[in-house]
Length: 482
Image (tube, rainbow, N blue to C red; front, top):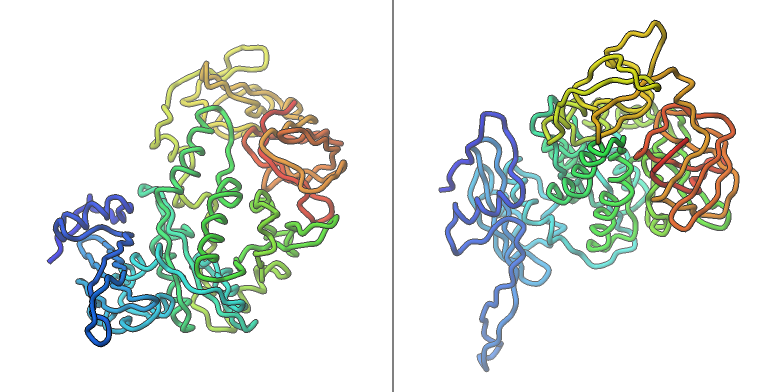
């Protein structure tokens, strides 16, 4: 039998590397670890007994652990179908019996006990492939109501949906990790949404890559005195790259998501555009998605409001209809970003709070705890409102001043570009800030903005998203302002 996975009392799923090492320890030197795709030559006789030749087969091994409960499966593929399936754990034997003889996509649609199904999908996820099919569509599933309705929309449109959920790294010390869009609970909810409709679902364990591509730059950005936006970085590169690669290998020409955004022909090019509901528009967070991949994307909810989506989910009897909103910066798992940064390497070192003339007004316990425009938590009293203006990581100082000192009219973006030629735009410089009319000049590595009216709270590391009408005509990360 497998040894239990022992933890500290808080259930934390191991990373892929940890599971691979554990799989080797538990099952001996002859068995390999999770997410392995191993070619094994099997010798079979030709018809008529003339001779023998090796016919390649594939072993897929997956496992899952929750507390002291563990499960593993081993699948042997013969061509496109599962020739045999074995494993251990609650519900594994029954599930293995039902997947034999099926294609990988067919097996991905079979429901079972959660732990057993976790192990099966752990094996299938990185290997899942299927021939191209014009009707097939990959649907990014978060376990929430938006993606569940997007899945139903795809089905109602006569398409052949395949749900896919990214299992991303979340802070194990976060207070409400179950609300994160990439948590184990969200994976199970997304899978159940698919299985109740008889549809396949895949889970891609990308925790290690996500931590390197998104979480580490987030921490390093604050260490440099910036205010990074991890969601723009994730969507603009990591997340959509992984989802589109998955869609390609399962033969799907289209990727559908539950984002509130639209696509629009503008100046002779297909561009991202604002969602119809201003309260839920997510084009800012998606703005750095490369326009070259937009023809492969579909946003079924872009023309409606969140209230309409929930009503549609209730009418369809979807379990996700009442699921709470997922949180921004999912890896924080519901925690405060300052607490997270303190646990992940940024030192709580005391330093001065200065006014613009260099006079000390108070003390702070870490420059990285403050972002331009912040008023609360400064710990100083001057008789008039003051705001954080900027911080200096070299001297561990925070400079504060009146609101007018936050005003910025010139913005430089060195990691971005214009998607079409424009000279006048509406520039959105933070997710929850209103757009400001501006002139824009394109450069070799980005662009410069001259704002018609001053913007307040502009921060290095935040996204500068440019609109012409509803169309996103440029995007990048702010590198300086004055």
